[in-house]
Image 1 (cartoon, rainbow, N blue to C red):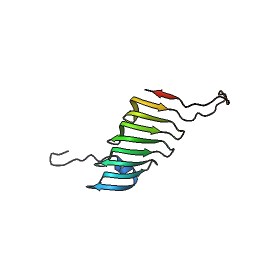
Image 2 (tube, rainbow, N blue to C red):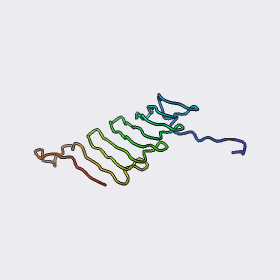
Image 3 (cartoon, rainbow, N blue to C red):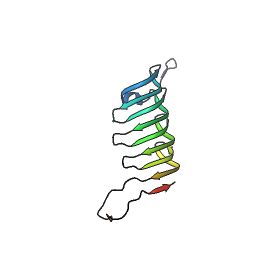
Image 4 (tube, rainbow, N blue to C red):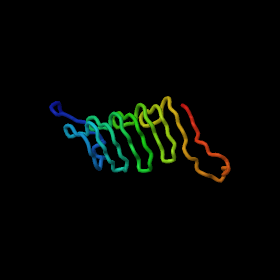
Length: 128
């Protein structure tokens, strides 16, 4: 790169969005909005300079959701993961993974040939 040129790092997010409705500043997602992605998931929440940044909700096609803090397109901070079977996790998140202190509650258990169909099914609770 020569010393007279300016380089801008364009967020990868821009090319992955099928539809966006919301605030735009200087041609970038900035403020509150909702984005639908090629992969089929959606994000509704805060954007900053073209990235998911702030609080919001990510929803995947299979019903899984993340509600919490986003930092530069990454789930990081405090959040809640919830799954279609009723399981959820509330607590710390780092780079998209459960991290630090949190509570996981298991939802419905699926039957298997090893389970006793007459036994009560109680959700498991684990504290990290």
